[in-house]
Length: 371
Image (cartoon, rainbow, N blue to C red):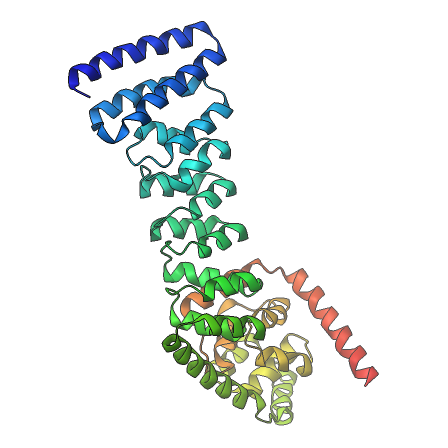
């Protein structure tokens, strides 16, 4: 299309547009929209940016007067076009109606990282789900998707092999996967997941999920992961299986309590010094929790159970994190992991923790009576 032809076409299109808008007929506007779209698509690969701007101007006027069904149709038709009218694409992508926004959010190459980040920050979950399936997502976009998205967003994002996810993003996804076997499997299949997160994910996954993930890994990665898993499991298993004599530690902390010298700061001191028995005994007294309840919580690879007595006793996060860190020397928690657990601890109310603790005590008492 020459410049003179473009000018003539612009005048013709604007005249037709003005006529369509003035008639007030929805059918006429829809017919005009389809004609203009057909005209653009028929020769789109030959248009330069100035010529595309003509169509952008016309479509921009028209889509403000078009019903949702027609806009959704336009979105589907323009989404795969690499040089589609830019402002039209942006307008469609920002529609609150997902039928209109969805196709361009999933596919249009005209949307920039800045466009996607802005939409991901301001729109609802349906828009985030659409974005999470588009090709070649970058860290700035996926970080927002992980921060604001629900589990459906997480599933689609991990299934999208072309998406790039940051280490911080993977940390959040791996934490969410602790309660979702399918999500754990999808996270474990990602070739870009940091090896430490993969190790921790597999340690916390159920045996069936672990076996499926190991089976599909490349041999080199599988051997490396299996070696790390075996060493960690052996170290943790050995440490957890060591006989613990809590009697002396219990007598010691009870004496401190009688003197009025057993406080949270003493528990923190025991934990930082990695005095295992003293830590458990002090936690038992300060949180009013039997040692038999605390022992499996201290030995579990998961951390959420131990948060309950700590929140019930209203401990500070500094104390809780010290207890979590000293449990097993073979599997220290990373800073992102601690940050995520800290967020969970902050969300857990004291009342909820106390209710859960009462339930555990009743169950423990019932089981002891039955045996």
